[in-house]
Amino acid sequence: MSAVLTKDEFQEPMTLDVSQTRNPPFLRLVGVELRKSYDTRSGFWLLMSMGILAVITLAIMTIVGVVNDNVEFAYEDFVAAIAFVTSVLLPVLGILLVTSEWSQRTGMTTFALSPHRLRVIMAKMVAGLAWTFVIIAFALVVGAVVNLLYGAMEGEMAWRFGWEGLTGFVITQSLAMLGGFALATLLLNSPAAIVAFFAYKWILPTLFAIGAALIGWFEDLLPWIDFQTAQGPLYEMTNMDGEDFAHLLVSGAFWLGLPLAIGIWRVLRAEVK
Amino acid sequence: MIKVENLTRKYGAFTAVDDISFVCRPGRVTGFLGPNGAGKTTTMRVMVGLTPATHGQTTIGGHKYHDIPNPGRHVGVLLDASAQHAGRTGREVLTIGAKTMGLPMSRVDEMLELVSLSGAEGKRRVRNYSLGMRQRLGIAHALLGDPSVLILDEPANGLDPAGIRWMRGLLKGYADRGGTVLLSSHLLNEVEQIADDIIMIGRGKIVAEGTPAELLQSTGTFFKAVEVEQLLDALVASGLHPAPVGDGYRVDAEALQVGKIAAANSVTLIELRPADGGLEDMFLELTADTQREDFGQVAPA
Image (cartoon, rainbow over all chains, first blue to last red; front, side, top):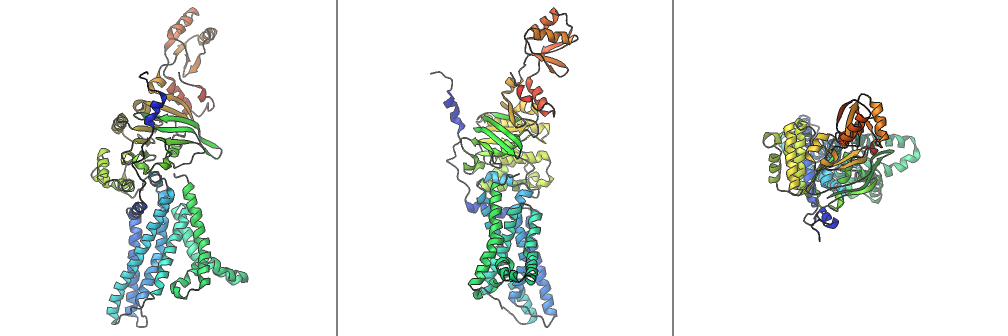
């Protein structure tokens, strides 16, 4: 035998032993995505602004409530006010979780480290839902603190809260975040997704209402396609009947399920630049 | 270790990478040389799964990139040093990478130290980094998971001469320890200095490959003459094929033979020397916008 390596021997070190590594566990990816949502100035201030706006809103409400004798607020009013503020900004959080990978081009690093893109997208979605729950908890706590102060100033505490609406509150806030998230995966561009989301959330229901007023048959169809209105009964979930759920499911499948499915399909196939 | 087989990537009618095949071996630095837009980046992006191939495939250590578990531990990637969130600090960029790969945080400090971004620079946001600092950060990120394969796209871009020397030492040392390095560049001199193997690509096709010595070895004789037409005729009559290069001609023959033919025909030579390597000529031809079709035929010796 000659000392010269045969072709096969030369090929031998060409393989990589990958038996010692495992893909990162899903929860670790969620942790990384959570970190990425607040470790930049834009992400940090988006989260801060939700808190700051909520506090400002409640401060104004408290002043108005104390000054005006004919205005009475209860716990549920404070929580609802925060819910309104955060329902505007939570979708932006959902959008930026996805689009910043494209606008800041970090997707090249993210998807090179985790080539299983579906896991990354799911981790982002779970991170978005985690923030949604944190913000709901924040709303309940801050609402309670403000109600305590307000009650002390007014001389009587109104702890009225539609607890049966809490589930609906959690669901609508989650759907708001997911709505932004879905459009983000579909458009992969921050400004476009934000504009599209607000059109989807605020302009579309108005157009639907106009359409329903003008066209008779459209009015009958409307509950099945107007996702925002279909979410209304969620606040009194105990009163929701089968048809209400069916409206929610059908309109949700169209306005949330479909964009999300196409969006995820797009992310899985997109060339990451 | 890196194997590219019949790789083609098309964008509509445009073929960015056209049926290329090559291998990068462990223990060696492979230089991927070509002008801008030659298909280097596209090839590297296909290797790490960011761009799907139209035909063909790439494997790393016998695996498709997608099938490598926790790939950052095996393959270090730097495709674009500017592709980092401008609002993150350098340290934070590495922290995210380390957390994704499940590495101890001490690794972040080690890497910042290695690329001389420790201390205050690591705490600055990437927005305020120079291109050279971004390259250093990118190299630190590629090395974070202690991989055995490195894929670096234009890593010397933006580095100052001292930085380029530092990187050269770093990558040589890495290859000497058995690592596989593929780095791209559009600068011939840069690749010549650092690479053990060169793969030259132009307009999506591989036009030359070999060691720098092989590719740069003198190929034939360069000459200039006063009665040049006469000499060309005489050379052709002797069965040689002179070709114009720059302001003179090149021919696959010994200088002695050319000199003798010139003397026999009473031609006044004004320059007669071994020709420069074909690589530079070929490289210049590739970068020129004209002669788009012919470059494939200028094969090196």
